[in-house]
Image (cartoon, rainbow, N blue to C red):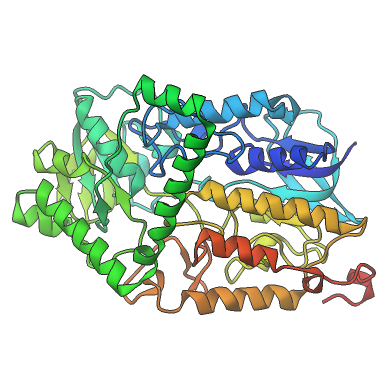
Length: 491
């Protein structure tokens, strides 16, 4: 049996960031468990052609570990994966991680978390505190399409890309027009594929822009830490300024809406195609995408747009909701992930024997997007209302990690139990903050809202600074007295 103060599940940005925060606070009794054989999370799992980040690279990194030699404004997936590997190795995180150890069960008992992993011959791990840094985009969402099992060619989700599949000269079908598809489709065309794109709902797309950094720019940033810090600060402010247009501010949304329409008009000449690519929902309702090459690929006739969903597969023939049929050689599902019902939630059993999934049966809830009533000393990073639609998600994970470190210091040798009313009050706050936003607008459907309750459960409906401020207001009154436990009347 292994005994530690803190067990971290997941070695992506959140898990590595948590480990870095613990080390910085001189808390060395922790273990990091990773289901795969390498660090990286999203950037390890997603390797499809064209993958990159739509947050500027100099903001999409740990505050204490800047990288002056990013190759371009928006880093590729492989470059981000390299960054995570480098930071984890240089800071000793890799050496402390236990790989190929998927969490099978976590159970609170006798004032500690007892963890079972899938590692062969592994013993139970006991931890005073458990940090779930499992990510929110980990379980691919697969569409329920009649006959899909009959397709004789390769079928793959974008997060499970099969690099053994040849691209040049083959007929690919891509299902979905979200962030992954917008990056993938132009790259498939560049590699010589013929592409049919099934679009259920078009996306608002803005110009991506950016630049390739010169060697001189990289050298300047490497030699001048202040210039590097200033660049990050500027990018942060730019990100915060985008909240208004994404969240439903009418004036800001109107400006961004017109910019997106102008981008579409400038890049797509055919009026019928432009109409098919124009969303019918408010700007900001769904994730706003960035691309300079998606529209040109369609405008050039290199991609066949099917403006309806895939509903049936008959051998190599794909049938759309509009009744159109297409013969293809490979099928790619760019259909996103299970977001509102996190796969790890079934594995975590709290103080009353209830699983996290059961506690969240009406949608995810928490206090401070991090701690959950009924689950002592449990911290969830990138969980309820901790995502962003306007700025870098790494900023949120680092804020949560700092909160965890503070909470551990305040623990005082006793389990921390969130008051149920504190969690309910925070949930009401989120509901009130969400009123009038584009995410809950009429006619809007997105992966930020849990359909079971109609609540916004993924996004934080405010600025990054507001999130920092809200975490700072969490105090002793939000937790049960140290002497109060399940057997002493805790509800």
